[in-house]
Length: 408
Image: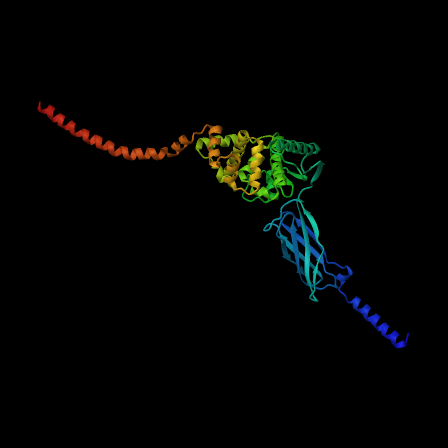
């Protein structure tokens, strides 16, 4: 090879090596590290370091919580020392407890190019407590207060509740269920951030396959276990059976099915229904299609009515018809149409029949009772003038008679 050709080749090789050395570090496998820590229910704190070879002008951190369609984001603060941080406010924008969260960073580099970090994830658990874990089949239980006997009781009741629910409706447990047991309702509500709903004692996120319950120690702990776990499990079973159709169920039916699946029914419901019957304070069932009252007394009465009404439908029409009712609603029928198509009767008609059967309530008597104060007022308004006329006429003959007797 000629010397000039060798020299040219050397120049080309040197130029190539120089250009390779100038390629940004990201093409050589260099990434921006991004880590996260959190204080449960308060904030997420993201931190990372930027390689010197990748000067960043601005960066945005993205979050995708499990089963959520929308993506959250926050602007990262970049320091002069090559690191960055970002704080996400969980008070103002809470993330559901016990869910998986994916996160990543997108940055604009000094050379105008864009960079996207690989996705990472963390499990957003209530890290204020040291959770213990026990598993059997489809169920995992987590607890921080109690012993292994307590944990085994949770699993036993879960399987009893599953059997009871499947005797009501043909439902399969397709995916596993995680059960988190708090030692008090206050601690559980703090985890769920249920502001203004101080009556909530348990909760389920059926799309996550997670139920959260509250079981204070004491003689009624087992009874509460037998009430809460089967109730929340029915929600999970319905969701796994219906998918997107789950949200189309009327609230009274969804909660009614969950309540009658309980191994230990709530004894307060009978008292609430008796008081409502005495005070004529029943809520129309059709008013419970979209939701329950948010205040404690209204919510408890709504639960009591939904439970009793759903049990009435089971007793009258049977499990097969109730399965069809659930299917009709899941396919998109509205609250009134679903009942009519399944049973051939309207929701108000069945509401009246339920009241008559459960409480001996006569619709005509009930209507008369509501009108009675107005009827009494009307009678009083009409009777007083008549009474005055009667006495005014009676006084005149009396005066003539006395004169007559005086004449004699």
